[in-house]
Each structure stands twice: as structure tokens, then as C-alpha cells.
Image 1 (cartoon, rainbow, N blue to C red):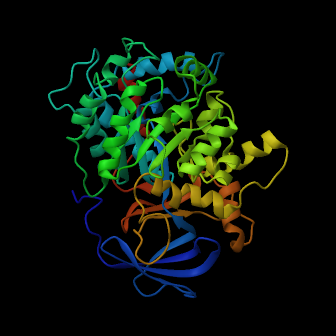
Image 2 (image 1 turned 180 degrees about the vertical axis):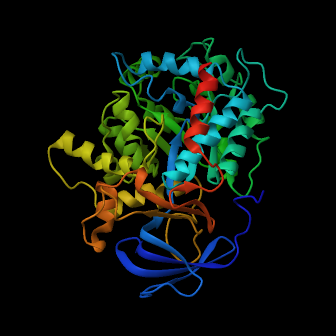
Length: 452
């Protein structure tokens, strides 16, 4: 079977409508060679001979900057009833306990195929299930991470594996029985294991601090140094819960953001995930350091986490990206509009982000947060990653084509994605995955295997 990330042949894509960063243009031809865009020809009213025709609105490929693939198995089981993030977490642990390299590969392959169907061409996988239950390493200490990398290859999308340091249950507390398989014991041992992971054409290796409660303060600098030496992305769950903020103040006399700043975690290659419960001083620290913010609105509302200060963070200098996190839904268009609509609910005013800004968060800035700076724009030299959204579905029909971007962001869903192209190759064609023939069946089988 040909690798989805092998060098693509020369070809031309004709885009009925194309998003060119700030505007929709009709009739655009993209010449592609070696997986990159070599020319962008506007004012091409008809498809050139031999061109592949993409009808609808074509965007740059979407970047899902925060994923926990195994959480997909929770969909439909945790959306009802009372509780909080902390009670949800216990159910999540019960799924994590059942993961093996084999069943995690099967689940992740199906989840990443679902992402491709939703127009996602790159995923940032925040990966912390490293060892066997009980904490004994596998014969290959990165068997679980390798399963995720291979799953992304088979599903045809690009991955940044954010190998996560997770050492404690809370400030001064050892890992609980569920968390033993997450922990390497020390940050130095985490760094040794993570260093064995190798990048490949479709995969980059980044780092993550699970949270300030999960990595002792004295070991944060080890993770920061590992990422700095490799010029790698570094992500961290930050201030997702008020209880974490309170515990951090009690243990260290400062907020999580201040603690991370003190130990060199913040910076332009770092992304804080959620950034929900922040002080004004926290926002200034994040913005002044150039630290990014990954918002995950569908998960944040599903878990009743709260609405983060995204507008204030962006004004302070923090680039925004988007993630589907727990995969209550996998739909980056929904994440983009939820960012705006949540802020409307919070402020009772409208128009906090332009469509251009929302699409940038879902494309170029999301890819940059994952270390793929050459992806996320329909321009010469960029990787040929394309997502085509139908403009004639029951959700998108009606607006003039020049308003296609507004229709895509504020009305379309993942179900309206017609084509997904990665490195110049069709991964989704006419709404069907080209490598995973029955994605719903693959998902059903993988989830059933975990629940058995």
C-alpha cells in the first residue's frame, strides 16, 4: 500500500472558490509538486485540462491542536447526569486503564480517520498513557506513542506527538493507581524515554507538561530544556480548573501561570491549553512571553469548565489555536464559531473575531502551534493541504459564493467537508475516506473492544 505521505505526483487542483487568507476568490488553480503548492493562479474561470476539480469552498487544511485520542471512547457515555470535571475524570481513567498498544492503535486510526473526514490535516496528540497498567514499561518503552504515530500514518494525516510528562497526582502527592502508567518517575527519566522517539515525514515530536499539579515545580525546567534543545513545541494544560489554581497558590504562593513563568515554560514555542481561569497578571505574562493559547470550546462547555478570556489573551499577544480535546465532537468549524459565540454569551455583545481571525486560528496558527510553520495557507511554497467545504448542503446553501467563508464558519459542520487533501494527495474524496473504507464501523469496533 502506498504511504499517504509519499511524494505526490505533479497535479493541478481547480478550486471553485478558495479562501486566500483574507478573502474568497472564485476560480483558483493550484499547481502542486512534491506535496507543495508551486503556483496559485487566480482568475481561472474553468478547470484547466486534467485538473482535479474541488467544488465548494476550499480552505487550507485544518489543525486540531489538542487531542486525547482515547477520550473518543467516552462519547455518549459522559454527556448526561450531574457532576464536574473531577467526576468525569474517574470515568476517563477507567478507559485509560484498558488501553494497550494494539487497541489504542485501532482506536486512534479510526479517530484520526474521523478527523480527516472533518477536514483536519494535522493533529496535536497530547499523549500521556506511556506504560502498562501499574507503571511497568513495555519492551519498547514508546510502544503507545509509536501506535499513535502509525495510526496517523494509516489515517493519512500529519501528527505532532506531544509526549507528556506526568509524574504526580497533585502537589506533593505520588501518582494514584490509574496514573502509574502515565509516570516515568522523574522528568529526567521522561526525557530519556522521549528522546528515543524519532520524527518522520508525517510526524514531529514535541513535549508537554500535563499540568502544574502533575509535574513538581523543581522538575519543570527539565521539560523546558528538552523542548528548547530540540526547538520543539511545548504544550501545557493551564488553569483549566479553579481547584488547581487554589492548590497551586497554597503550595507555591502563586498562580499556575506565574509558576510556569518562573521555571522557563512560557515562551513563543509554548501553548497553554484552555487558559480558562486567569488573573490579569497571568494574561499579561502569557501575552508578553508570546505563549500561545489553544481553546477547546466544545470540551470546555461539555465539562462545565468555563469560558476563558480569549479576547484578552489575543489582545495581550497570545496567538490562538483550536482543539477538539475530549472529542465530544470532532468539528473544527464548530470550535471556531464556538469561540466567537461563547464570547457573545459572556459579554452580550457580538463581533469579537472576524472570519479571517477564526479561520487563521483553525489553520495557520494551529499548525504553527504544532511546529508545522509551512502549513496552513493556500500560497506558493506551502504544503498542499486542502479542505473543501460544500456550499450546497442544507446548512450552507443560499449565501452568495463570496460569503462562503461566513457560511463555512457560522453554518457548516464537519459533515459538509467534501474533500481533504494532505501533501497533495486525496485522503477524503467526495466525503469518503480513501484509506479507511468504513470509518463508522472502525470506530464502533474500536470502542466496543475497549468497553468489553
